[in-house]
Image (cartoon, rainbow, N blue to C red; front, side, top):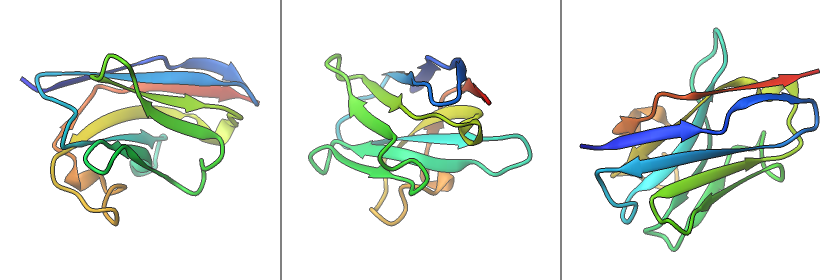
Length: 127
């Protein structure tokens, strides 16, 4: 059974950092992409970043987080991290990780291509 579990969210001050974890089970991270998305109240789910093991660990980032967020695959191989630095109140949202088995570099940020999702973890940045 495919399962993704996010953790690491919390309350942090403006300019602070958090590291989110996405722990997977029931499938191999090989030949999939793992994407991080976020959804703020009243807004659509937004693609933040993804990592592909098929393309030698190629990473993608939304323009709004480039230079501040870093996605990586853990040594445990079934975990993907999102290191978030320089957080601002605009980054406050529920953060989700998802797994997609069919994708292209142009579609990584579309939530519709992801087949499985975690339950989300809340990130709140105070001003």
